[in-house]
Image 1 (tube, rainbow, N blue to C red):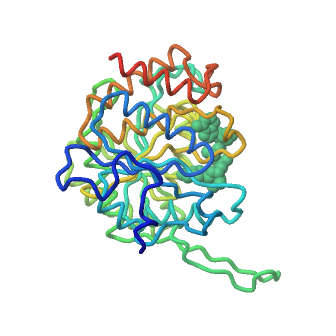
Image 2: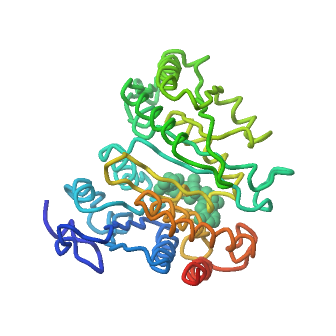
Image 3: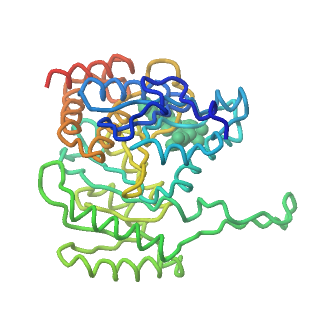
Length: 376
Ligand SMILES: NC(=O)c1ccc[n+]([C@@H]2O[C@H](COP(=O)([O-])OP(=O)(O)OC[C@H]3O[C@@H](n4cnc5c(N)ncnc54)[C@H](O)[C@@H]3O)[C@@H](O)[C@H]2O)c1
């Protein structure tokens, strides 16, 4: 490890100068690639405008850095983030100049795995009926949360290819499901359900296990047993189960049915993009990658969108809602609510980018929300 490769690209407070007990929460900002570099500055601008007591340090991890010096994650980088920061605000990774996307994999999956950020929390809330492609769905009709297991499943890259390039080629992709991993994400989902309210203030009441245990019997059996056992500790919460295929159909037919969904890494990845389509598209979707008690990471759901990158077209609201989620996690709930209210107003007044019906650019949409929160 060299000190210079851990130094933030630019920061208003150098890491080494943080007092031992800082009143400010320390935020590592990693915009990444493509539109990540456009939307994350808008999220930071809104955090500054809302008066949150935060100290930002900016890091240049991403394709540019990788192409310049082959660094994906600086040595000891994840340990430094865990040690020196209260939370991480991240953009997106993926760049056509790096066809293998090796940097994206090492930064994003590396962070989730090595920092053990096992709970991927994705709230799905429709802010305005006009954003939903489904007929007759009112804003409160879509308000659920997907809790996705984030460290196991098929994303561990275990497996191999045999006889590659021949007609007899065999590709094996292992699906890892540990008792510990399934139990902790299931418990997280029940705890989340018990502790959180919906946007209209009503309590969350139902936890639903989404799996494919009819076909994937071994892994599915483990999830089923654990869900039943852990669920027994939460008698006040209604338990439900759906196969992932049926759930996709039901989500389109009647999204009102859902409250808290817990699922594995791959199904969570897929159903949350489907869900994002119901709240106005990828530009509106926020997420957190959490491990209670440890430094957690917050990122908009979307990728780096190379085709619109650099054009001031990207919707910053997903990143701004992600920043609000980070504030809630850090205990600054009043400020988080201010941001959510301002975003809601921006959507209603069409002070947004074109993907959700407005005429503003990325910077102008961010500026509108920043001004709005500053006046609240
Ligand atoms: N978490 C991440 O870093 C992450 C997630 C998904 C994809 N990726 C990477 O991003 C790159 C592009 O992937 P993709 O095209 O499949 O997904 P993407 O999310 O980047 O884009 C999908 C579609 O949604 C649109 N879109 C996404 N975000 C938007 C926003 N904020 N405002 C307006 N429109 C938006 C894009 O223009 C595109 O049409 C790839 O390299 C992929 O690997 C990274």
